Length: 248
Image 1 (tube, rainbow, N blue to C red):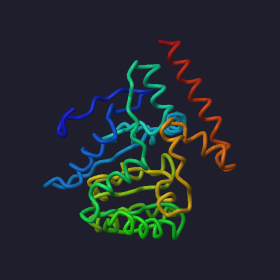
Image 2 (spheres, rainbow, N blue to C red):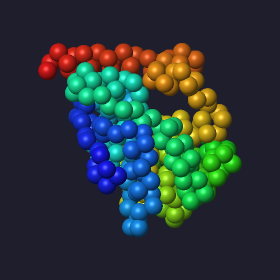
Image 3 (cartoon, helix red, strand yellow):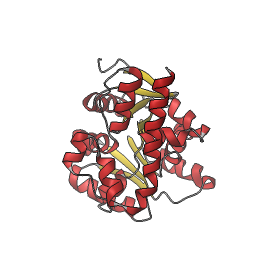
Image 4 (tube, one colour):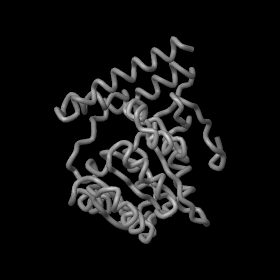
């Protein structure tokens, strides 16, 4: 795949999945962010919970189907692609994408931090500016209702950001990015879950060994009682993959 050609795209449970490595992802997003003509793009980092959750959320499905790039965030997606499409899909997790873009582009990159609890995005922005040298285009917490969506989208659109990090929870963040993409007018808008918390230091990045094996979700669920209710979704996902494999 060249820098200008689109990645190969699979379909898992009616949702798109691009067969693209992390370095290729960084190349592609860098091209979008600094293109001579500014155009909005949305990025989804697909994980098993998204697929399970989307079964009852048609707006979430539409947002993911309309995304310009969908990467495999976790080992569960790699497993599903291997079982259902006989394709080995590389992983490009959200944190690796975000940190990789900041490392590559540093001071030329303007980032808007949107999400998490009040004060957390501000801390994440300060830490990212210190650690990566990026420019902070703007900051806003994620605790606002749909009635304020347009105001926040216009705030982002006026910021001149190259990169929007939207961390408002699965579904909400992807729908927001897709619905308001023209107002946001951000070359790359990525739903990034807990990445802002990790950048702020209010959440811990999974250890390297779990990330290399692709099982960081096990570490997170085991170490955080608030995540225990998410384990059944992962079991449901495995059952869905096996049922689909038998059906085929």
